[in-house]
Length: 225
Image 1 (tube, rainbow, N blue to C red):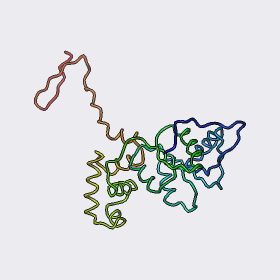
Image 2 (cartoon, rainbow, N blue to C red; image 1 turned 90 degrees about the vertical axis):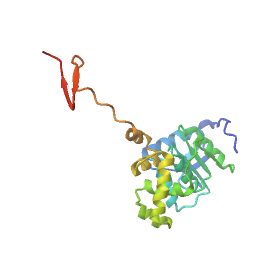
Image 3 (cartoon, rainbow, N blue to C red; image 1 turned 90 degrees about the horizontal axis):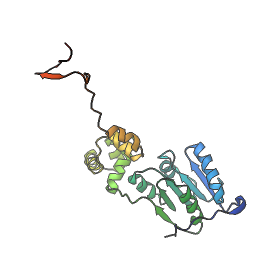
Image 4 (cartoon, rainbow, N blue to C red; image 1 turned 45 degrees about the horizontal axis):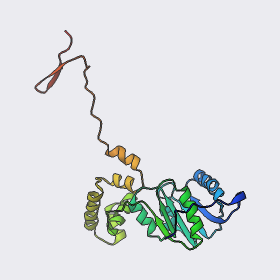
């Protein structure tokens, strides 16, 4: 494993030591990353043998890896998607370096410098997936909006097998709908939290200065005259 504790030196005078073919699904962010990496001696070059794949928006890196036609010598994938199953699906494509987490600017610069020396590594949070490989496959396809019938045809199993596997996914992830699974897989924890958050209790319909009494199924206010 490489020693990632050593700080990455910044070359003087804007000297470019490394080149990468930077790909990102958000053009504005891509331009910003090019500017942020320049002080580290890293220059964007579409013809570079090193691909830096920045997963923005979430899902861009996975889709790119699935449809990648050009052969790169090195592939660095960086994602802030918090879903560990998503990390495993990215890692299945065997990138040279896989980075997951927040504040990845420095780790990306270090990865570019070290990949040229032959380093291969994965830097992800300690969180691991409780799902099996087959459960992860079902989760990935559900997240894409596929029906059980489509999933069964794709995986070469019965619909009943898919349904049983999906039940296990629900139980292990403690989620209860296909929408929740999709939000979880694509890293939309903010939206998922809103869905899972209990609805606030409704305020009392009468004012604080009034008393109330319950008469059978009828609610009456006894304030006033």
